Length: 334
Length: 102
Length: 154
Image 1: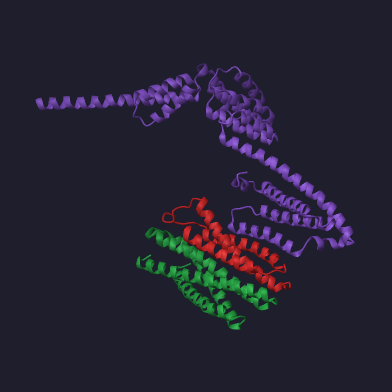
Image 2: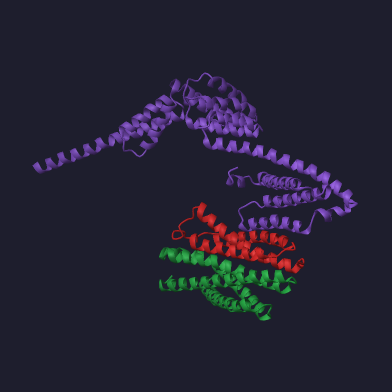
C-alpha cells in the first residue's frame, strides 16, 4: 500500500514537471501566432509586443530567430508610433495601389510629414519606383530619390540604393553630368556606383576626343584624296594608289583573325576587332592619300602625319570597343 | 644589293612570324604568371579550357602580325641580319620563361 | 577519347617526337657544314613535318591530360608537374623554330644576293640549333615525367 502511494506521488511529480515545461512552449507559440496575425493586419505595436512575449516565454523555440528578426525590424521602423510604417505598408503591400497616381501623390504628401527615421526614406524609394517604373514619369522620381539620399536619419543601405537608382535614372535620362554631381556629393555612400559613373564620364570625354581626331582625319582624307586624284590624273587610279595590298591584308588579318580567335574562345565579342581592322585600314588610306596628295614633306611633316594617323588608329580602336563591348575597357582601367 | 623576290620575302616573313610567335608566347606566359592568380594545379580537378592551347593560338596570331612586319622589312634593299637576331631573341625569351615562369 | 585511344595516341606522340628530334639533330651538321644541298633541305622539311605532327598529337592529348593526369601529376609532385609544363613551352618553340629554319633555308636557296644568302643561312643555323635543342630538352623532360609517373602508377 505504501509502495503504491509512493509510485502515485512520483508519477504526479513527473506529470506536473512535464506540464510545467509544456506551458511556456504553448504560451510562446500562442504569442508568436498572435504577433504574426497582428503583423499581417498592420497592427505593428501589438505585433512587436507579441514577438517580444514569444521570445521571453520560450527562448529555445524554433521560431525565436524569426521573432527576434521581426521585432528588431519593427523597432527600427517604430517612429511616430508606427503610423508612418502603417501608411507606407498600406501602399507597399498592394501592387494595384502602388500603380495608382492619386495614391502615390497622397503618399508623397504624407511622407513629407513623416518624422525622422527609416520609414521616410523607404517611402521616398517606393514613391520614386512608382513614378519611374509603374507610372512612366521618370523625371518625377528624381525628387523623392534625392530626398531619400539626403535623409541622414534613414538606413544607410536604403540611401545607397537610392543613390544607385538616381545615378541610373540620370544616365537613362541622358544627363551624365547630373549623375556625376550626385555621386560626387556622396562619394562614400555607394563607392561602386561612384567609380562606375566616373568611368562613364571619363569614357564620354575620351569618346569626344576620339570623334574629334577622326573628324580631323576625315577632313584631311577628303582633301588629300581630291588632291591625289588630280595629281594621279583621275579618280580611277586612286584605289590602287591609296590601298596597297599589304595594308589591306594586314588590316583584314588584324581584325578578322582576332575575331575568329575570339569566336573560337566563345565568350567574347568579336565586333571590336573587326572594327579595329577597318579602322587601321582607314588610317592606312588616309596616310597614303595624305602623302600622295601633299607630298612626302620634311621630317616634321612626316612625324605629324605619323602621330595623327596613330592617334586615328587609337581613336578607332577606342570607339570600336566602347560602342560594341565596353567591358573590354574595364580591363584596361578605362 | 638587289631587291628580294616575292617568294623570298614570303619565306622571310614566315620565319619572322615564327620568331615573333615564340617571343609573344614567352611574354604572354610571363604576364600570366606575374599579374594573374592561377588556381593550384594540384587542386584544380577540371578546367574546360586549355590555357596552353589558348596561349599558343594568341601567340600564333601575334606571329601573323610579325609576319606582315617581316614582309615589309624584307622589301628594303638591305641585309637581313635582324632575322637571326630576332630568332635568337625569341628563343632566349622562351627558355628564360620556361626556366623562371613555367 | 577512350583510355585505349589516349594510350595509343600518347605512344605515337612519344615515338614521333623522338623521330622528329633525331631528324632535327641529324640536319644540324649538314646545315652547319654544307650549303644549298637538297639533302639538308629534305631532312629539314621532314623534321619540320614530323615535329608538327608531334605537336598535333600533343594537342589531341591536351584534353585528356587536363582531365585525367594534370591534377594527379601536381598532387604527386609539383616539380614533376612543372617539368611537364616547361616541356610544353619548349615544344611550342621547337615546332615554330623548325619551320623558321626551313623557311630561311629555302629563302637562302632562292635568294640571288650573296650577302642576304649569308644572313639567311646564319638565321637558319640559329633556328635549327635552337629547334633541335628545345626539341631534345622537351623529349627528355617528357620521358622523365612519363617514367616517374608510370612508377607512381598515375
